Length: 257
Image (tube, rainbow, N blue to C red):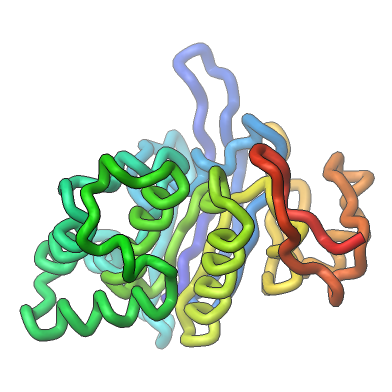
């Protein structure tokens, strides 16, 4: 699947520009990292693509691999979204029930449901949480479960808005490894994050927004070389040596020193 964004613009009632002439394209084979300072329009762009936000101008188009156009209604079942406030995606009291609920809504057969749960438990460290009440989980555990409820439905493209937020180092590492594994299986990843230091080494494309305008689109290598002039913190390590490092609460994923 390929998604094309053509001259997308959004304004407030007071005519303030939130997104202006966004023009980009990405496929289900890409690992796209979407960067920008707070208020740049990253989350808003995701909501537009997923039909959660009305647009004032432009268009969002969806295509099969053979380049045949498809409707948003046809594409929607192949798109997954992890919200920044991901706890809103947890609907059931017990973790296993929440995973099963999403599979049932997607029409997955009873026998296949258990296989899907087993697969997502191999990707993410949640096996020990399956029979837990959601209210007994930590914030990081609940975030991980909300991500699992999306992955278990096997979308072609997964959109994640600040998924590393509130995760400790081992859990953040497990999540990054899961995203890498999914991308290797031809699942598209579109990732909004401020914790980009560890992620860029695995990205195929970087898109940078500033005040609702795309100021860079291209390879991570080219983007990093321009970070300083684009107003972003430059990595303190080369792209080849970026990795996750232990974090204190509230800090970013960092490259090795």
